[in-house]
Each structure stands twice: as structure tokens, then as C-alpha cells.
Amino acid sequence: MTRSPIRPSDGELAILRVLWDRGSATVRDVHSELSRSRDMGYTTVLKLMQIMVEKGLVTRDETTRTHVYQAAQGEEPTQACLLDDLLQKAFQGSAASLVVRALGSRRATDGELDEIQALLARLKEDRR
Image (cartoon, rainbow, N blue to C red; front, side):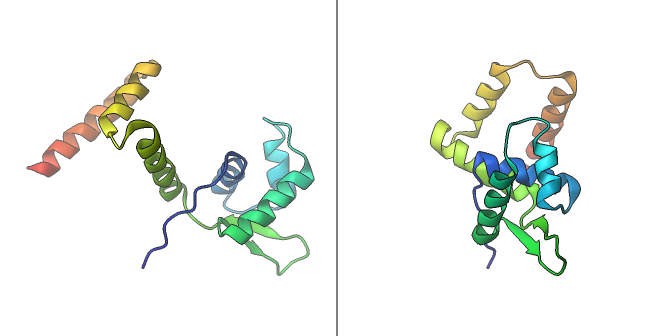
């Protein structure tokens, strides 16, 4: 039986992004990366990462003095979980409403539109 992904908070998601990019990192590495874009203290990052271990969002290798952390779940399952949550809460489960809102809120690039058209073509083909 596959365990469903855990929904991370905003702070946890910021940490997960660093871990997904790096593969693994120490608290100091994560704090250094996060400090570039937000004001977050070292002890706050440490505490969040300890909580994330307890929640099963990250794993911690304690074989060396400096603990090394890794994301316990991939970026795609996490995104799918967050998207499903948003879809249900804000759009009553309507993917069409979500897409219309997303495309109507900001201008999509030509590349994004090409990706969307290719996806729609694949989905139509799969139904045949």
C-alpha cells in the first residue's frame, strides 16, 4: 500500500525545494540557501527540519557529527498532493476552473502554451 504524500507548510516547502535541488544538505546548507531570499534564523530552520523528520517529510543521516537531510518524498508527489488540495478547496474539484483561472490571472509564455497544447493533444489521443 502506497502512503499518501504529507502536505508541507510553506516553510517546510521552502526547505524541501532546497533539498530537491541539492539531493541532500545539512541544516547550515539549507539555512544559507534560504537566507538569500527570506529572513529565517538558523534555529528556526533547525527546528522546522527536526519537525519534518518527525512528520516523515525528510530523513536524517546521523552517522556523522553533522546530520545530513534528504527529502523523503519527491517533488512531483508533493506537488500533486498540494494541487489536489487546492483543486478541492478552491475550485470544487473542477480542473477546468483551475486552468481557466491560472491562465486568466497572468500571461502565459509561448512555451507554456505549447506545453499545454501538447498535453491536451496527448490527453485527447489517450481517450481514443
